[in-house]
Length: 117
Image 1 (cartoon, rainbow, N blue to C red):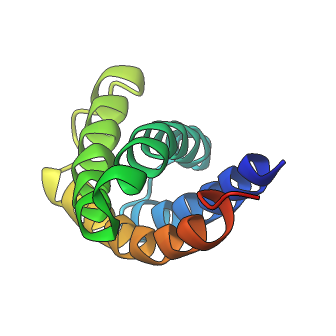
Image 2: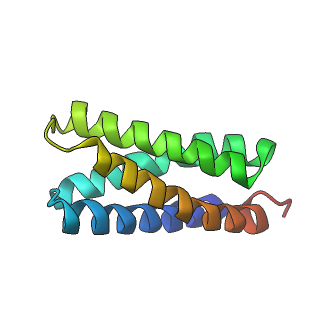
């Protein structure tokens, strides 16, 4: 149940950031934001939060989450949504702000999820 709560919090964080940046500033489709938030959440939770964070700490996990977010957003936009018009700077800004949010989310993960219950 702890993982469900963490995933839900992460999805809200990721989707809110993507909504503000991509929807309000760059007029992305709402459905695309919802799907993109889900994909980024799952990928970064499994790889970054459960894989890298416990082994390497917050700094390394945040850097990895930046890279994972950038690649996930870029690949999803290009190959799932077939959106070739979005500039790479949108992916970069989104990923930088997501990595900053991840820094705080990792603190939550270390205190509440990754500790022995």
